[in-house]
Image (cartoon, rainbow, N blue to C red; front, side, top):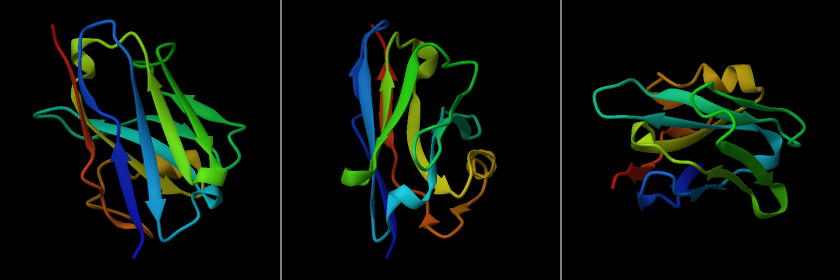
Length: 130
């Protein structure tokens, strides 16, 4: 069974940093572009960053550009999201998902399941508050 697992969230003060990790079991993450998404209370899930299979292409939503950095370690089957300069509006549950290309990854945001992977993971809660 293929499963995506997010970790690394927590409670942090405004201006603080966190590093999220996305791990996969049952598949080789290096075959896919991987994206990070978030869902704040009362809002739809949105795509915020994506990285291509070999990491040569990265994309960011305007809301996180310049503060968040996506990276990957295919040898460890993981993708990371370094979040700096966190703001209260970054508070959300963060998820990862994968597909062949970043544009397709972003299109997954509002789907009930991730094509080829099944259910969304549990996500990891990020809370930015003083």
